[in-house]
Length: 318
Ligand SMILES: NC(=O)c1ccc[n+]([C@@H]2O[C@H](COP(=O)([O-])OP(=O)(O)OC[C@H]3O[C@@H](n4cnc5c(N)ncnc54)[C@H](OP(=O)(O)O)[C@@H]3O)[C@@H](O)[C@H]2O)c1
Image (cartoon, rainbow, N blue to C red; front, side, top):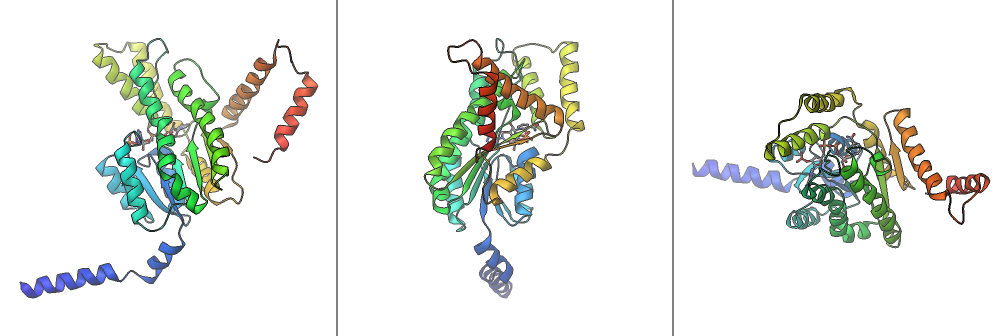
């Protein structure tokens, strides 16, 4: 027995103290990136894409099974990280520091949505969506800022074309995504002073678990309120969940995140839509607001002046 214990402990010491030459080299060369909300959908696709392209990924997740799943992927270490919990963010900072790779990038992907008319949505839901989608990136970026400044690195948010589009039932979600647009522009100029690049990726509709979660959340709320969904509502919910199946995998969004982390000059904004229709809707909405702003005000600009402004915007660097 004593001999067996000796052999086991010698084997363990050898295993711990002799990394393969390849892993020792990787450790020194790989840039590290933290991805929040990496358990599914866009976050998982981004974590895998970065890990397959030379980065070491710290993948944030909340559930034990997700942490285990992420740890089984090469070049990924899971990190328990609920972006609404300061103590988990602080522990994640300590963990990343302890790994000795520094931190080159952050992808603030964790996000949630609520889907009720503005007169019906409970205030707690608005708090919850903002807590994750808006305060989450603010907290995570702030906590990791010293490491990003040290590396002269990059941070990005997963916004949405809902940061430009808003309409029936999407008010709460769109409010949060509009807020991330404002945050990005302020943070980008502030962090440029420290040679850290800030950008935002605006996906259209891609396959993920967000739709089934919205439906489940709404059904739970209705149950708590003692309400049964009507047949019409049931059909709407079923259609929303089923629509996910027809969507594209979020590979293009992951490509954009890779561009953010590798390009010599990353862009400020990356709109990534699965089709022309969603791109048209988004750009038209942005231009539509310009027309609304301009109309019937003392300094109304002519069509020609607007075209000149558009030309200037098109020629701008970022
Ligand atoms: N899919 C689309 O069509 C689309 C379009 C535009 C923008 N987006 C944005 O893309 C991002 C990812 O969403 P998705 O579509 O990939 O949905 P998803 O599959 O539901 O993934 C959302 C991720 O966020 C995590 N999360 C939720 N609350 C969190 C919290 N408090 N702390 C940390 N992580 C949390 C989830 O973890 P759990 O598994 O533990 O809940 C999950 O990993 C979101 O910001 C979303 O708004 C999605």
